[in-house]
Length: 326
Image 1 (cartoon, rainbow, N blue to C red):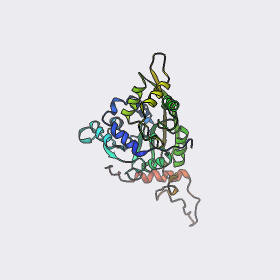
Image 2: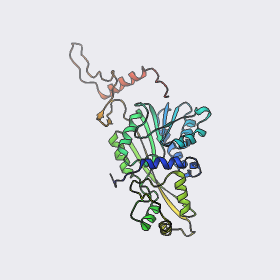
Image 3: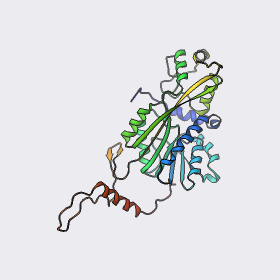
Image 4: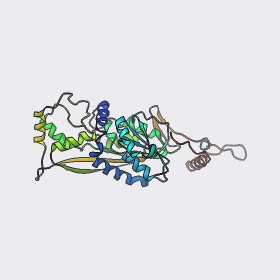
């Protein structure tokens, strides 16, 4: 992996909890990235029955998914309880549009293989190590299910990071984010099939540095680096940072945001799936009938991969419908 760093999970939870009541006043970028992410829903070969929105925040993404797939059971999961309380207003009458669940992305409170689609918009950048994350995400996806996510890349807020480095290089003042290649490596190592990654850079402008800082605070996107200074920043250092921040000809400031997109499928039946204990593959009983007796009682060759797949499809067709997620 590239540069190693640690994030303070408690600080992440506190920041998003504090921002819940005003989050939607500042989330224009998050809404735009979510809309672009949902343009990739055509990758699904059938309408999903169960969907997980990981890091759902105030529930706008979960509501959009529920409208797109009105027959699906959608679950909005977030680490911060105040965010889920704010999400109630988008959940429809008696929460029928989607369910709200508090949980940790590294320890999801769901059984194996229950979701057809796992969607996450600008959430996973708040985890420093993606390797256990992808193992957990693939655990709850059904075989062949789609993982669709976005994240911030390391060029995000690079102007603010450089200005703080010029004013005070002793501690990090801006959270760092994982490189696209680190995410791809972690997804492959976990067993995600045919992952596709891409990135784009968006630039937002603000009247001044104070406006940018207020927006970050309103989003809960404050500095969560474990190596940050714990005391007050101080007016003099803040003023030095603001003076070091480059300005445009019209006096406004620009802020860069690198957006990373990733999609891929969970291993299908018979394909290896990574677990903390090592690789494992799941087969139906029908698919395991790889040896056949010939007319004289001898043994035929092992069944081909295509025959195994054919038997597995027939086996799944005979299954009763799965119970609805609770």
